[in-house]
Length: 194
Image (cartoon, one colour):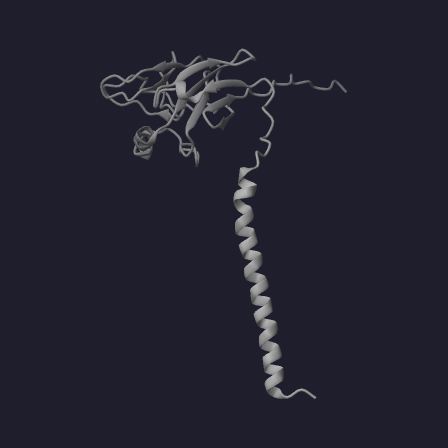
């Protein structure tokens, strides 16, 4: 029969062995992390009919238009810290509608070049107090992120109409490339005559 000191010694050995195995396992994991990071994992496939844009060619805060393969036009704006700060510091009462969460968190914003009423939108560069953004022939104004603005005295825009935000354009940012993705084609509404 084993004595109490031997049982305690045996229990200590088991705990010590378990602790050593745990530490070795953790050490092996730390050794494997750089190995797994060095493996070139496959990226998600490039979306069909996407239009690549070199992000280095985009000036921060200046919207540039691109025609997609489906014939639609999209404005893309690169955001840097200064542009993002300027957009985030605009007071909430300046907009017709609240801002979507996370809209300004990425490096780029992309919006459709037509309103929901199918009115064309064009870039209006900065001038005087106007920080730059988009306008439509009806007098609607948007900032570079596509948020509908209430007109201010001394700035362009119609003072009487309320406008909706511009539709965001789907895109994927991959390193220094922006892949602009066309919107899915609308299916014609078919009503059954039955």
